[in-house]
Image 1: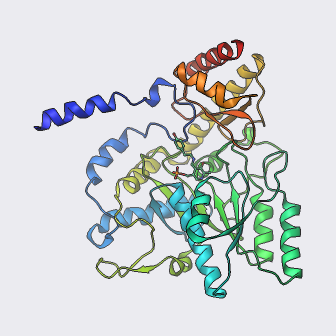
Image 2: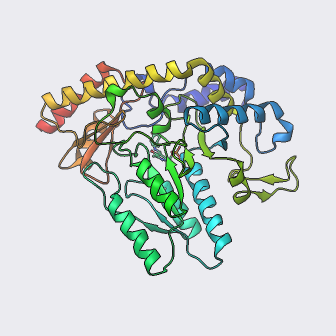
Image 3: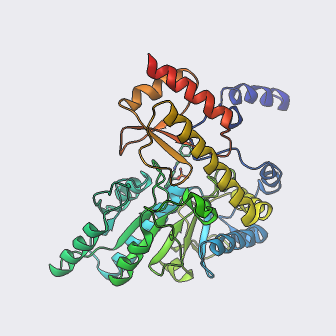
Length: 390
Ligand SMILES: CC1=C(O)/C(=C\N=C/Cc2ccc(O)cc2)C(COP(=O)(O)O)=CN1
């Protein structure tokens, strides 16, 4: 095929895809990347951070991006990477917890406490590292029951039983946007010398920029490295950071954690490699650097406010039509109670609406990303009303 034919053929495939701007994508935590990232992608498309000695400028960008993200997460000295996504970031944090535990006790089964609302990337980590996951009961706000955690750890300590090696707190859970009480989890982690990882894959680019008027009394919004017990965080630029895929982020409190991830990499320009993925493009790094410079704190504050205003609009209009949110929106995520979410979601899909559903509660799930406008919300609620009538 000549170049023209190749491009013509590819256009046929691309036309089969949905477009964010059409507003029918309501169940995605990704959105249309900022336009500047097209130009940045073109500049950095051949870079490979898997061999950083060859791409020193791009590696310098990654270090600056990690520091810039660290700044809005109250970490003056972060260590980390911009990697394939939140899944790789969470698995990386579990690698660190597992390797720290194994270094203390050889035949120990690493035990990690995390909520049932945790993203399924932790199930992949469990399977890969044979982790022992403990899921405490949830409160009515869909956050982990702190008394249960304290009692569980105390009981283990009293029995001199297998200790708890890690705790995972979610700052903006996938299904509902609920934020665990990271402040209390940090105290528990510090008192018991347990590694606390915060999965803020979605919330990391929202919570630091959230105006107080959107904050609910039932949740604690302190969630970052300002809490001494927090040892690592997942924060994904390719969600509310408006970077193109792939751009997940893993940050550790400092560089002392690198030794728990390093693997010898003899034939690279570096002698060690800490990331799970080897060869990795620098496009996500450069795009994140660019969008963060373009937006600044004000830009992300405006973005968070715009999405929260549309979220509250959706809830207000849905309530008028008799639909009930599972919880008041914590972030730009709405879960509407539904007696048969699978069926409703399928009917909506046939009408061209792509929402998702919750697992932890019978509900429809809508993520009000920047590409979702009020007109899309109005049309969606019209379709939902029609589906529920029949
Ligand atoms: C709290 C948390 C998440 O909500 C999460 C992903 N969430 C949602 C991923 C998603 C994105 C677009 C889409 O159309 C559908 C789903 C991940 C994994 O992030 P990923 O590997 O970048 O998908 C980790 N933690």
